[in-house]
Length: 221
Image (cartoon, rainbow, N blue to C red; front, side):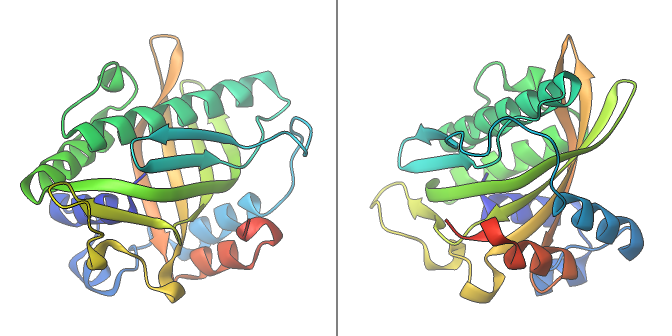
């Protein structure tokens, strides 16, 4: 998922406060809750074999990697499968500058508004996602009825956006070395038999949550 497009869209939509948009740090709904979620994301949970290869999806010049294996728990695995599909459809739509089916069956509510704004922004400025984005330490932190919460760490060191006309990297879309890691909370909902995304709250460095992601053993690959 494009870090630049996501944060820009969240700022435009008002889902991040102005000071957070200026500083590159997401506003916290409560340091305690987010801090607990970040700590949970750093804790090991039962999953498929640790040596399972990461899932890498290629979309043009862009690669989305999911470095964490699916959980062994079937209910949690279904949530993560929905999370992965959501990310892939989001990225395909962002790259195409228009919704790619069946993205609206997986992205809803505030998340769909954010995606629409990100697509409009990238189309307006002729931006295409490129490089690689790597999700790791992906965890289901809770499932309650038709709602679930997923947390993840995000290594955006190799993520960028390019000018669609020239193919050249747009410098302002490249994360500075000290702000290349994110911690994200994904609020999932069950939609027509599968899990989709309702909203997301990202935390960028120098937030404590993102700094914790940088410090994890699997932060670099």
